[in-house]
Image (cartoon, rainbow, N blue to C red; front, side):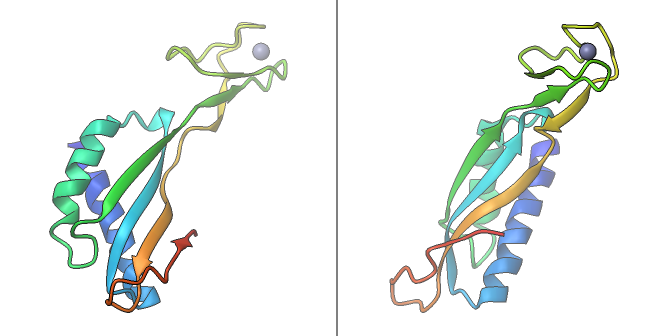
Length: 128
Ligand SMILES: [Zn+2]
């Protein structure tokens, strides 16, 4: 399943970063999901809850997902628009040489960690 592999990768990235900064646990993880990744966000969040609980860092962490809209560009005529349907055809000139400017990424964009283990949120938000 597509979403399961993604959930495992997200938890792996969060674990690695938590270990890197010396965190005792991860409080929250925010992921940005490009519209073109065709991810079922509710399914991904559900799986992140399950996969996250298998890691000592992310067990109990809050996972949040933000969908990044797909923005398309036609190099033939220079038109740029937000994709609504799954149509990769320029509405202005009819070209099929359409490129995506955004919406193709899936990454961990924010993380909040606990550094000292005594309940203080000293990590604030970590972006990379
Ligand atoms: Zn065009």
